[in-house]
Length: 159
Image (cartoon, rainbow, N blue to C red; front, side, top):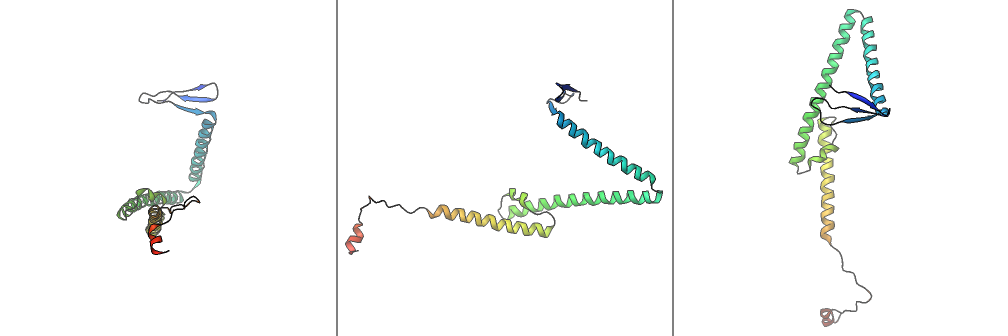
């Protein structure tokens, strides 16, 4: 269990727990924000509990069932998104693109994800091609005013 103590009224330093080796320092503003967020969350839970207490039993059961269905749908959506992210990483790898591009993809649906992979892949390939062409193009030699050299070959041809 952590022990906390107030230091100079401005910071709270969490002491070391039995298995903790690092100390965490909080400013008073951070502690106030944590307390405010916790109070807000508890207020929401209390309001929901009061609402449930006032409901008849059949409506309460319907409400709880709806909440469970909502939680299940959220979990299923999260699992589907993780699967889509894994598939997207494989698609990027199959196209020879860096996996870091997966951060730029649209995961709202499989079709959107595939379209964004195609668009990002095309943009990436165009950027790489342009960069390679720029490096291969090289530079033209600069002629200065002091260069009065003549080309012996051209002189021989009368040019």
